[in-house]
Length: 265
Image (cartoon, rainbow, N blue to C red; front, side):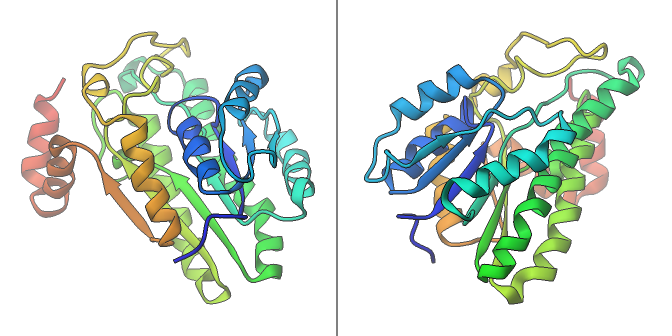
């Protein structure tokens, strides 16, 4: 188990939802934070709302995960804030709400760029310094959709499945050098993930799913995430009974699961 107090933690997607709540709860535990997302004004709002023993040690780095050419520059900037990164929280991302037949290829490419290529690029960029210091942790917000797939989530599920494949390999490679990977796999959380999800032509859905509205609060979810970070767990799954049942059905009763997914909305 690690002590959060004094750790340098870089959080992407920190301006809302899970990322915002992570900033608050980690700040309370004394983390030195680097907050990133596209909206600088929202990052400033989150920074000002953080309370904790090291809340004066919070930095802001605006970052658009779709701008691959700028990620190396942003990583250098992040590392330079305190000289190193103890924990990278790859939390930023975007979801999808469209059938395969309706989804343009540029939407698939955008979701894969933001949800898969950007996180692994950031991990590769901070990894050398972690290996040199013989300490580090890559915390990755995937989803239960990284284990199961449902209608209208083909790109999102593909990206989340890909994250599991990449980070399982990374974990095996660096474990003996005291660098850990923690995969965070939530079910439905009350955030704007469905409201901002991309439709087939790339426009935002601008509508909240009923399942999302009935999910865990960000506060409830982040308490579980912080515990997983402190314990350096390899994977953690949480959500409502519906999501947990679906995950078990996929593993132990794949035929029944497939039938249920065909009947789902």
